[in-house]
Length: 214
Image 1: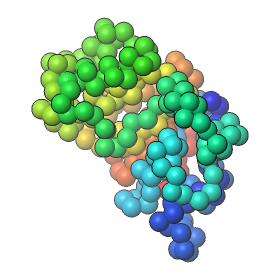
Image 2: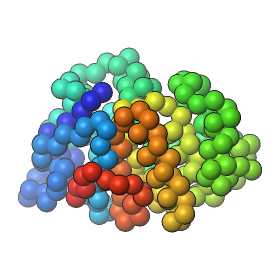
Image 3: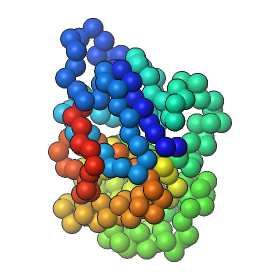
Image 4: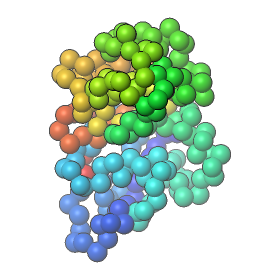
């Protein structure tokens, strides 16, 4: 996948309002593979909705979204499965971890589909992110910040043309923010991938090519 185009899109809940002041909604925006995008938003402006629309979780919007010119509304279930396995890696704000499973079990649910990282590479990521002792700990017993790091590792366990990260460091301190930024920068550079980051204040530490106001 080389491009994501968002054309005249607007959440259904915003319909009927006066034109929304935004560089994303009701605009013609093309995001290209290999670039880094920061989407800055206030609470309630549709940040997580935008991510859900791009990932195909929700369709309650007007306008259109297209991958390399193909409207996503025309994609089959099989096409979506392949895109989510090889082209589009998503880190949702709510993380969507299984609390009864261990940190490693949560990550392996993704990695067993993609076979992208070795077990040693995954364990090394636990160490890099300062939680090496949490590999076999149930997620329900981790702090929110530790859970966020587990979700970050899971996101890194797949190839991607676009990394879609919804407030990826909202529960992390400055030091860990820098570590996460470096990990995604390295992975994106290796794959020639784009990184799309949303934020309401605590931005992921990356050098961005484009900054947009939602």
